[in-house]
Amino acid sequence: MPHDTPLIATIVAGLGLAFIFGALANRFRIPPLVGYLVAGVLVGPNTPGFVADASLANELAEIGVILLMFGVGLHFSLKDLLSVRAIAVPGAIVQIGLATLLGVGLAWLLGWSLGAGLVFGLALSVASTVVLLRAMQERRLIETERGRIAVGWLIVEDLAMVLALVLLPALAGVLGGQPQVEDHASLLSLPASYGLWGVVGATFAKVAAFVVVMLVVGRRVIPWILHYVAHTGSRELFRLSVLAIALGVAFGAAKLFGVSLALGAFFAGMIMSESELSHRAAEESLPLRDAFSVLFFVSVGMLFDPFSLISNGLPIVATLAIIVIGKSIAAFVIVVAFRYPIATALMISASLAQIGEFSFILADLGVGLKLLPEQGRDLILAGAILSILLNPLMFLLVDWMKPWLEKRAGKTATPEEAKPIGPATEPGQVASVQATPGKEDGPPPRTALAGHSILIGYGRVGSLVGAALKEAALPFLVIEDADKTLAKLRDDGVETVAGNAANADVFAAANPEGAKRLILAIPNAFEAGQVVLRARAANPAINVVARAHSDAEVEHLKGLGADTVIMGEREIARGIVEVVIGRTADSAGPPSLRVDPQPA
View (cartoon, rainbow, N blue to C red):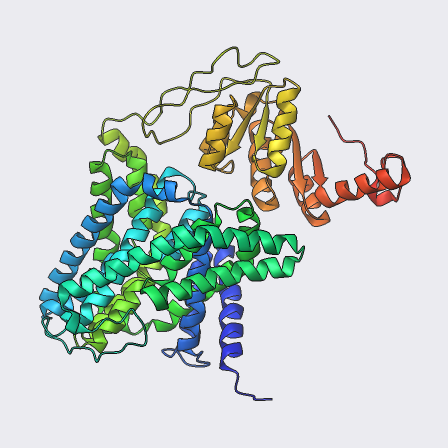
């Protein structure tokens, strides 16, 4: 058995150190991704000690990008994507242009050529897929209008960079670089003999062909494969089919159509989202997606040379200013110009204030074509690392700036009060709220309900609980963050509060002080625990009912103040015992299945 195992060593060192430093960062209330980046620096070639294989780390990180974009696609539909095209397409194009001009200006000050400035500016204009999506997911914004705008913006940037990657080799000679030797190993590499417009036309034709194939063939084949595998009853095969589709479509899109791996994976997920099994597919891909996205940050950290902060101090500061300040201001102005709320503009600005994987690819290509000097690549790498480190602070900054900017804009921070339809607080009535027209942001309106139940989450469990409450004519409202679910609830006449219940403003809108009961139907016990603490602080007398999947989660939630915690597996066992023995499990069966009286 060979003792040289660079792949295993890279994975073990990357994940092991990422866990250690991520846990330390979390302990000091710093985003874990800072720890992941530090882990990458420690196993990189610019620090003493063990050096991981950078090429292997980059390929593993690419798998993380694929799975992350695939997961985002599972929450999207073609209709969702087209709904934001009016701002995503022109907004991304204008922002790329402005950021590129700023990059060209800095390159001119450094004495570089125009070609070097173009490559440098393009590299600074495109945001990292992983960083943006993780920021959206942490704030549970993916399925909101702001999340759709950000993802649509990201897709346009992705397509623009694909076009840049095929145009640069064809234009290298004109821009003062070295033309690339023709290589037909991939359809992404188009010969310069096609001419400028030939290359552009061929690129758009291949992208269009990929979209057509996915919409015509993929829309039929991918759901059919999922349903066929699901009917075999093998969870292992189902998980394998999900991963094979995500990775296979992404790889095929890159090799056959010249589309980026990330874009191919996004379309695979978007097509799969039309299947009834899409939620299960998302669950099966989640563990691998998280692990490989961590390796992405480790691979980025490996590229960073800490000593460059000394040798290139001022140019790095200027580069970082373009990424964090220049791009943010450009994005903010563009979104506000399209008459979107200030909160949306700030969120888009913060999410785009970083660069990542496409920037590295452009930098490497520019150096290979003799367009970009080595110093340019170093500045791009340093700018990427520092902007990723600062990105969580950008979100904190925009939260602080939002009230001030809204006040300066002459806009009140409190939105129009929602008007319940009918006697919402009377027993037997299920309140509904008229939708406020327009694209209003800010804290949600406070409900007029009192003596009601607050239902957190409306998935498979929450929808059954909600139906029972409605049938029993008990007043209740639902806190949910999925736009599609919210729309259906409003159509059914159920009052809703949009957002994450762990957010103070969102939870306050449900009037916990006047509520009788809090029902936590979400499966995440840690997030549920935060809501329990918030509910107890607002109303010590509120009755809290939660769900759990293990004894440890039951103890965790009860320790935080939940009155009743229902463990799903125990309820299933109780039902089976009742059927088999013919008596209720409350009075029969093993002690572990008996129910102790709970306070009302």
